[in-house]
Image (cartoon, rainbow, N blue to C red; front, side):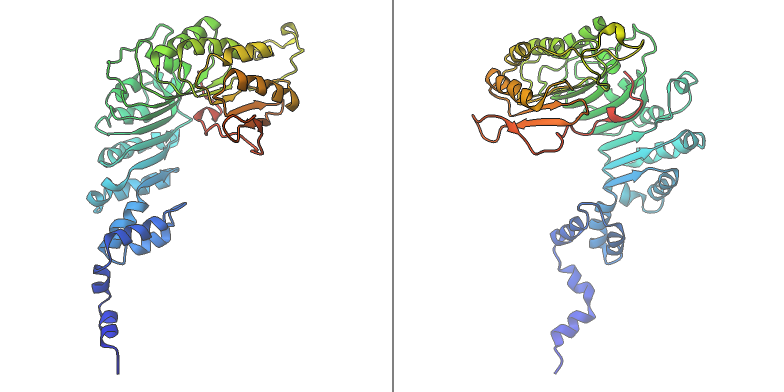
Length: 403
């Protein structure tokens, strides 16, 4: 005798689907999203029923990557089509790549119209390495022009991998909830250029990755940032010291500081200035030299235009300055000609000078790290098996980051 219940269930699969809790639909869709969304399967789920479609589309469109003109064009058509109302609220993050060819083909107009429709957008990453200061001088449209027309967005994270100028501050003022801002390069039209920012400027910002030329424009402002990645390529140490002196006033709550680029001052000189002005620092990363040469070289032996060498610090000076950082947990030092055994000697002294330290990283001449880690409270720091210390990927790794 046939099972009536099973036959009925088989005859009405839609009725069974209607009994599935929404949480289960969401769980299945999220399983297909990790680590990378499995787009073909998610697309098939969209055709099962409305409940599956709602959850699958939420995962499919949550993070969008338009890394070519074709993918950008397809996405713009989708967001302006019949599904516009349903899909625009589901896009939370978008990564855009544009080129001079796309900009000259009115592609920016389509991008602008699409961005203005994305009411749920929280994160924008925009790459355009071909846009430079001559384009600004000729008033050619670029990524910054598009952002300026999208002031109604409510972003939490913005990454500008393209050249910006002072107009970026106008857009940033329209984003009071921005928490993370990363700027690849900033173009100063003259050395006396300054911007007036309101007292509430970026009051929720906690992470800033920017070149020195951008940060100097913030003189007089006070931000609550906890993480600062700063890339410098200044012409003289006077400008450099002025920049370092303003950091304490700019970000009194600073916890993590990473310095990149070519610095005129030595690491110890910079540490001394920072120690006087930033009291709660927990992570100090100094990656100030791209070129490492033997420290026996005299300055007059170097070719014209060669980067300034970091002088080899005295151990007692390193220990003395480390004592002034009462909360320091991680210290990353640029390449010096020290053997691993000598690094161990330096580390032992650092631990006594700064008991809060749990990780010290040195780099040899080949930029290989020697990492010393404290395994338990009160113990000695020992060489770790970690092959590399995670410094977090930075936009300063790109080839033409400018100061």
